[in-house]
Amino acid sequence: MSDATPTEAHPEAKLLRLTLNGRSWLGAVEQHALLLDVIRYQAGLTGTKRGCDMGTCGCCAVQINGEPRLSCLTLAHDCEGAEIRTIEGVQSGPLLSALQDAWVATGASQCGFCSPGFIMVGEALLEEKPKPTEREVREAIAGNLCRCTGYVKIVEAFMVASGQAEPGQDAVRRNAKGDSESD
Ligand code: FES
Ligand code: FES
Image (cartoon, rainbow, N blue to C red; front, side):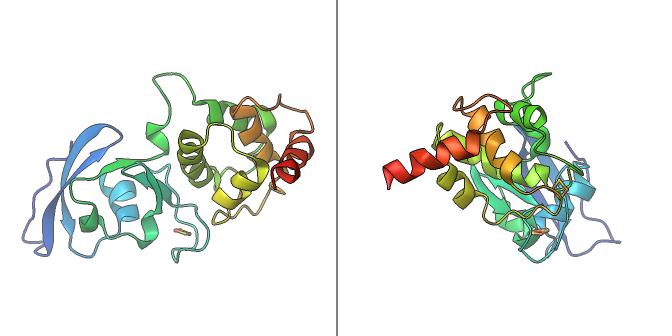
């Protein structure tokens, strides 16, 4: 927990209380600070990335009270008392989550810069829909951009994490059939 308090150097700062990855966090935060900056520079959790800084890439996605949200468009003080989950809070002890495991197994990450945002959106999707169709996955990640992959491996990772495919199977094509059947 931060022990920061408003100082003469930061007269605009106000105390902000969060639950950050299950732990209480208290800090002196400028009134117009973005949640992204508080997470990265005050809480020191640099897994959340700044890509576009204007709401178009999804790299900065975190969960606020369980909902995926863009931290570059969120004022930190609007989150007073909220539960914030970042990529650092997805892992359970030494164990990766099923989606993180599948990300590795399928090669869904190349440079990796976009991966935290995809995974924060993806974890929320899998909590709501444990066995999503490919279409539901693609709709959920529509706000996340990746400049390296062709998205096929990313969608496959969701199919593997949800127990609908094994890594290396033609998971996307098999699931597309399921989508058309459910139309
Ligand atoms: S940095 Fe927030 S959407 Fe791109
Ligand atoms: S893996 Fe490089 S931007 Fe997605």
